[in-house]
Length: 115
Image 1: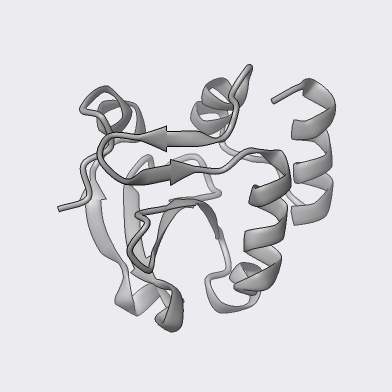
Image 2: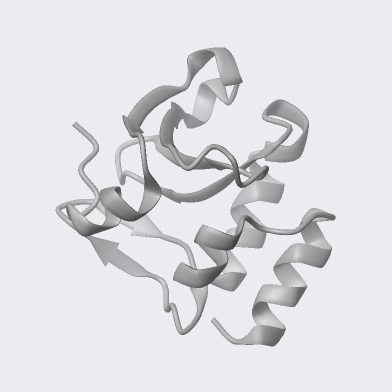
């Protein structure tokens, strides 16, 4: 993603993205990772969060991708929590989150496991 894309995403969300995720986004193009995880590019990031009303149903979190099986990949926006969570698109509530990994960078390095 370009700096302009990242700025547009942050404006649309009305908040800054966590530093560890911003670092990842630099130069990122939407694609599948691992066996099934799609991590969104700029257009999909904004569209999917709007479609699933993520700010309303999961305040303080952002959907950054999906597992190609009906679950969103979620990150906290506060930057303190570096964990990766999964939640069904039909149940986008914090109480329904499942921990996928304790650390975003480690999850990426492990090729984005979701099982």
